Length: 235
Image 1: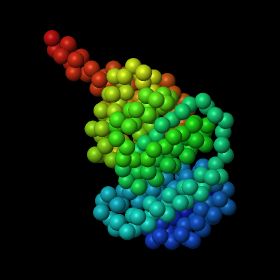
Image 2: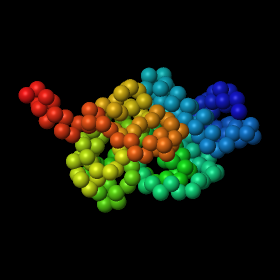
Image 3: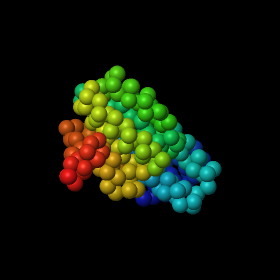
Image 4: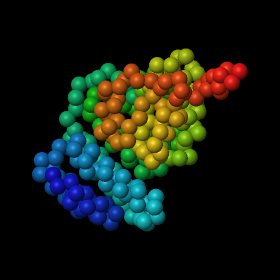
């Protein structure tokens, strides 16, 4: 698969809302031997990141961005239907994301790949209040809470949510996982807010969650009790 050429063609098709041209790119990638999983990780995800970068830099119109994100989500839906599903790994993941359509698109790629790897997924999208998220976590006790592709404005709520989960004994074993969105643009941010695990892309996320299910934030990452520890040290 000539990834560079296909990416250029797909980018052009997406920002112009050219549905037949976009589908033709996907078909050409498949004919070149790319699996559906590779099409998502090696074609869709890099093009998505390029679109987001240009839009944030005011180098893409809102119309072009809407064309691109809406059409790419259709392609992601269609391609994920052909994933080769693996046996269940016995882990349940509750996933949420940032408030924008583009955030949900990124998160969808992530959860589709996790589901393909055998995780059981419930995906709520964005715009969910912390109290509702916390109630769901308490009721269902997922193995992991995934927050993928969040916006900068979400950070105070995410930090608060992670702290609340740690403070509630019934949720102590839930692994908090973040990635995409603002976490990709600020190195060290995921560790700073106390997340247990993080990854930059859907492919990295799936690999990390398969191999590091027991990883938890150390004491210096956790914000719960940090002020108490600092006061104690000062004394």
